[in-house]
Length: 120
Length: 110
Image (cartoon, rainbow over all chains, first blue to last red; front, side, top):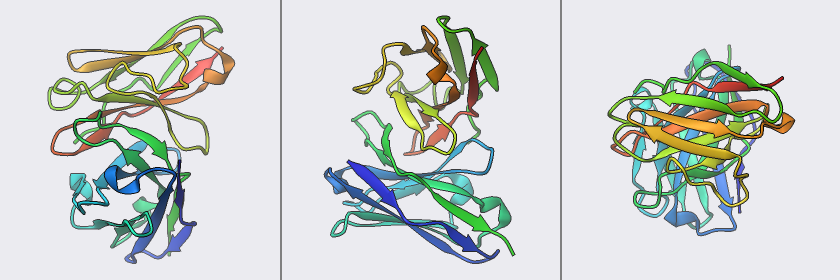
């Protein structure tokens, strides 16, 4: 079981970034995919979740309107797109498998992270 | 949603026990038995240690244990070992399919 994320990205302020997360070794669609970020030297921050099968998603209030999350069950890949990037969005972005409602609501499998750098 | 509050650092000698607290509100920790704990070594992804307050995933040492009382959850590391030196985060379900992490605690083995 693993989650493999796309490579590092360097973006200018105001641009958008799309990070991918490919799952393997388990039934990808039945688990949620959560996205968590970590700015340099800072703590973990939950961004949001999506379910690949249903397409349902939810986001932390501070990211609503600026983040979208999608999934492709044919390729077992989840995507997180963030727009209107600013320097404060510079961080490592992790995807994590989430057990859904009724099954514990925890994150047990993590990708290795994707560094997104925002600078002019 | 504000981050859960953890002490910035705790320390202990090898063999001792340390406890990390994680304080939230009645809307997150206090309302759900859905608290997780993670260990994160430098430049690594977080690793799940505890879920649903007290449950350990397969392969996690029984030296790690979790409890909860009211709006505060705790992680205890017993028999502290050098390899336990790391940063630890709590995480709670906060309703409406949202989650919140703690501020993180650096554990130092003296």
